[in-house]
Amino acid sequence: MTTVGKSEIIQKVAEKSGISNAKASQAVNATLDSIADALKKGEEVRITGFGSFRVTHTKEKMGRHPRTGEPIQIPAGKRPSFSPGSKLVEAARSSAS
Image 1 (cartoon, rainbow, N blue to C red):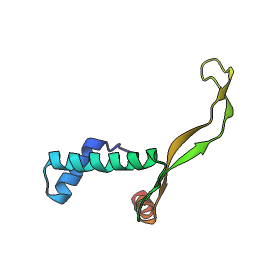
Image 2 (cartoon, one colour):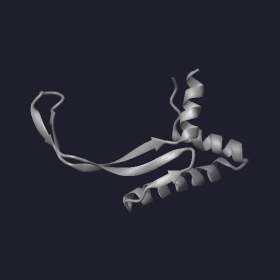
Image 3 (cartoon, rainbow, N blue to C red):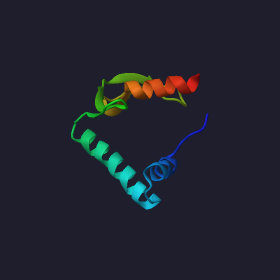
Image 4 (cartoon, one colour):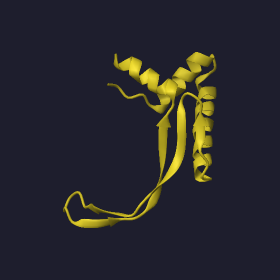
């Protein structure tokens, strides 16, 4: 399995849309910034077929310090979450075949 990073996504966007890497970089960055801005406002971002981004609330819980094994209190918080859409799920299934 290989990892695809932001620069590879920018390159693919440039190739598929016929625009320069600089313009593709602006488009990808604007998209990611828009998603982050919506999440900061507590909004859900839904991209049909691809998936949904939302902020979920985590409860306070007990954990263990990884080095010492000592019990520690993990505070409640917020974290981004992603639920894949139907087209993304199908794409992942077809790549595993």
